[in-house]
Length: 265
Ligand code: SF4
Ligand code: FES
Image (cartoon, rainbow, N blue to C red):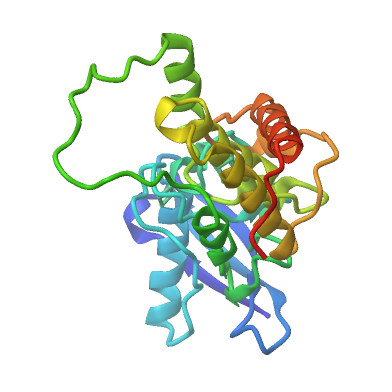
């Protein structure tokens, strides 16, 4: 099936592209790749704006627009994310919303698919259910603190190198590209980022052992694969979360198990 659409706003010097997009009405039916042509696409558009152009035209034609997730469109919420020509978030190490069409050439054929991982089932077209990540966070990605007035900022000194490393880990936006890029569909980089950003800070110490064993147990229950140190996760991560965080997780996990921590059933 093929339909042709155009972007009248972008002017005559825009790119003409062929898109092959995964269309799947709902989780109960089989999906398939469907071809569309888009014309006059400005190189300054974001990838999601290019999909907006396609969707406006599909709606004008009375066709069902392509479903895809997005929210901030500023690279901070983690909602967007699709496989673009087989790469999570496409050819640049950024989020799909921050990928610009200048990364492509006139005449290109672009395959667009949802994240491919069984713990992320397709909801519709390019939108997947990433609640498995929420359940991993619920298993331990928090600290228990008394509520009330915020403590004085200098009351708990944190060494600069620890605060920097904790901040780097905390930049994980939960997009799921690491899982989609990994041949094992492992969520280790995501879980490691969440374990690390709390485990490096004084506030994270009281629950540190329980946190790591419960979060790792939950990711196994969700059906994510094991890490075999391939590194595709870090390569695809738009926030540059490093493989070192996985080493930190393994270090914490071994220490917790040796200390007798066991996951809640
Ligand atoms: S570790 Fe990186 S790729 Fe994985 S969820 Fe976090 S930001 Fe996304
Ligand atoms: S839409 Fe928020 S990170 Fe892309």
